[in-house]
Length: 294
Image (cartoon, rainbow, N blue to C red):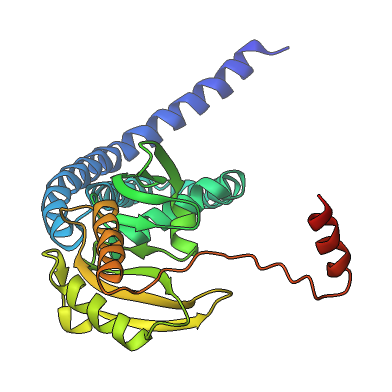
């Protein structure tokens, strides 16, 4: 073995590397300077961008997420420029391909989380509701307590907190009882067939409109709904400011009490089920005879 020959080869290789490093040193300094400039630019631009996006998007979580994505995007662009300056464009392409594969894998692995994040982002921009609104979904009815990017906290009227995934709120029907600031109350009731529905309608509408919480009084009305087994079924409609004091339960209580009092004062009967035994029907005569003997 010629050790001197091997040492010469190793020495020549090291010298070539050193020469390449010295030649690349200006590019390396320029790349580091470029990266530093992009980092400073990202920091300054993100502050400006955060103020601008906060005016357009009122949700803090969404504004923070968009600002972070904006800042990271500028830094990533700076990294790609720096790598290209030091002649590592091949590494740039490898990073892009790797990022795409990793993103695809994460998307499949965390599909449910991704759907909730996207739904939370879209709702943060569209703003179908805000904290404090009363909303109703498929299985929950209550007041919005907190809005996150993954889920929304709703306090129902039984005092429990419900964590609702944002994709459910985004995909299904959502009713917002606070948006318009008013609500229509519907109260069904019945009167006997011997009473006049028009008279009942007149006296009940007059009495309901005297209640202080009723608004849009020209729209208060009573409608005949159907013929029941022992009554003519009517439906009272009236509008109230909502949410506002008094609450919904107290409003409905006072309205029902008013209906009961008005009908009683006008001698209008609220019927109740009555059972009539007909002993003339087949088999009924034997039953009547048996009851007479007893």
